[in-house]
Figure 1 (cartoon, rainbow, N blue to C red):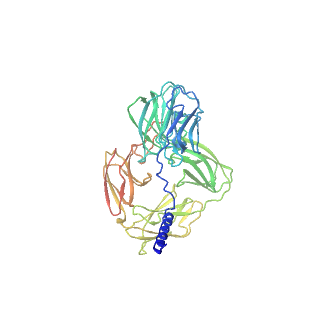
Figure 2: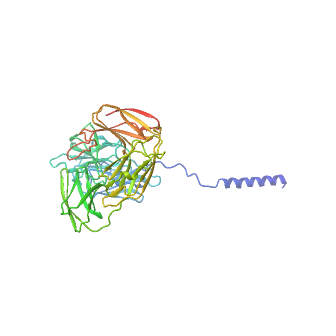
Figure 3: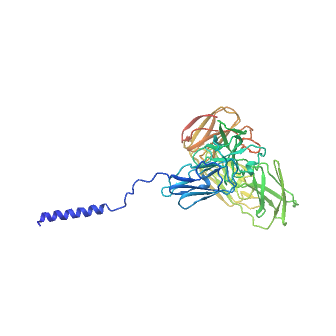
Length: 534
């Protein structure tokens, strides 16, 4: 074999080996499966009549599994006890439903699985599958439609239950607390509209509920509720609006108890403004007490001195339409120590004041021991104001642009309820320029005064608020740059706050109008908005 032929064969072998090596690797695997599972058969068949059994089997063409069934599955009318549905975690080709409830005669039942049925591999959903049967000789086919809004928020919650209660001689307003509805549906997590289907003709009470524990019963302490103002008659072509709101609970004290030395916590529900805590036990002549509110929890703190050598103390608590007596057991415990926190820290907005809050009620403030110096080490005049309920001292002073402040608080400037005092405290603050903030001017159309206009974040938390009683421009000044939402509250009773609804009183919440677009507040920019109230 000549040399040229040998070289050619050698190069050919090397090329084949390299090509094979280069193509070794993970195979492509083909296109991703995006096809949802399909039903092969149902036993009994879907939409069957005169149902008398207690088991249903639904078979698919591939292995499936069930996800988030507790949230996704809607059974209408509800069943109690709930049916057993398998499999819950393992993959299977068959869903089995075992009914444990006694079914009502001549009634159409529907199992709406939402998006809970998915294939085992790619989790492609079999969306909104509904299995329907009737215990009578026909399927009810009427429907009711509508939409959900929130009394305060621009967008309502997900997974809102919408329910119909049959109007008959046994119906009363307490039914939402005690019994399950006749029919139910849910907005799930994708829409604010609803349709109740497979209904029987008749008269109904229409209710919406953000049902936190999913028992189809209203619990005012946790659930939101909405109701239509009058009974509805089915069949109907009307589209119904339901406004969700969180009730303000009736004022009530919950489990008062001693939590530290001479400090009793009175937990409460409802409004605290009118609560009065009155000592009923015999106390010495030098007895003193103070009440403060926890900044976060729904608790009022009752502080007293001197220490009493007793096993218990008697109290009477009153509020609007409420009075109750309590006995609180007393033991020797260590008193809280005075700790002082301050806000804000770092940067101080022109519209804000400096605040100091104590863990024990303040009893004396010596302003001679408080000094505020500017960047030129010149003293700055200030005024103080004590809010006894929040136990906060507010310090107000002039705040020029681009200024620095040093606040020095000497020992014994603050004395607390038990006679303890502070150590030396120092705080450094500064202001920005006016150009670092944005300003927002709002003009209202269709307003009914008084009005409350608020800027909020996307969670509905209030970042700025103005109360207005006459038609004039509303100016939000020195607003941090960012995105905001705007809403206007029609303060119909003139009490300066939003009043929610009450189901038993058939009272709807105060009207709230939302500006349709997001507000983009920019530094060194004045924005002007016309707010047409709907």
